[in-house]
Image 1 (cartoon, one colour):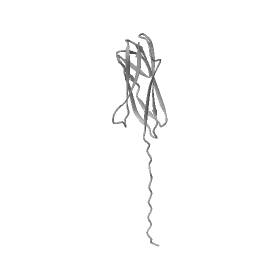
Image 2 (cartoon, rainbow, N blue to C red; image 1 turned 90 degrees about the horizontal axis):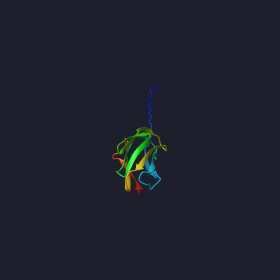
Image 3 (tube, rainbow, N blue to C red; image 1 turned 30 degrees about the vertical axis):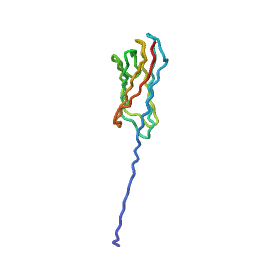
Image 4 (cartoon, helix red, strand yellow; image 1 turned 180 degrees about the vertical axis):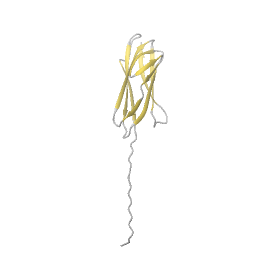
Length: 131
């Protein structure tokens, strides 16, 4: 009749962590002054959790003039791509930007990526020879 009874439950919540892989490739390279090249920028989530609020900016040097951005806007020498609100595990997103050779040189386009869980930006440079 009046014995003690105890009951306990526990749950484990597993949370994944996102892992950002960034790539920037130009095609063609090299280009002539006045010629165009297209940069394909790809972000892949290699991790097991989501990447949140990914922002991508491309800074173009004087040797190149950005003309148009698929998934972004051009303002002077800067291209801002639309924010990716969420990138699930093992998924990718891709942006493209076309640029014209403005002057001779070994141009370096700098793409800067930020994301909510990163303590510092990820920076990827792509070299394009303009002659």
